[in-house]
Length: 121
Image (cartoon, rainbow, N blue to C red; front, side):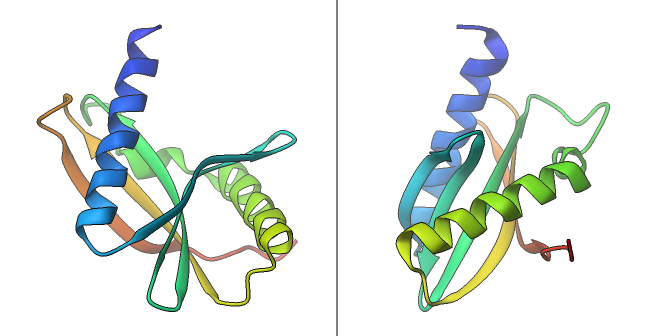
């Protein structure tokens, strides 16, 4: 497995651990429908969070959340819509980004709640 894939998997594991430690219930990980994917779907209270995980070894070139551009946002929102319809979700939803920076075992994690809102198509 390529080094960036190993880092990404470790980052996602750290993200799940972080969310669980902060009172979230993980509903799905890497949920797919056709060519769409959601990294993590979690709930806390009466709200469902669609969480995009961005893992980087450092921030020398770009902050992890900056990689979530309008094209990525559009794909996440379309995937979330498919998820909501598939599971007949009737709850408030939000879109979060969880940044994971560093090395496995020594990650710095930032949780950006309501990182973006669904654009109008």
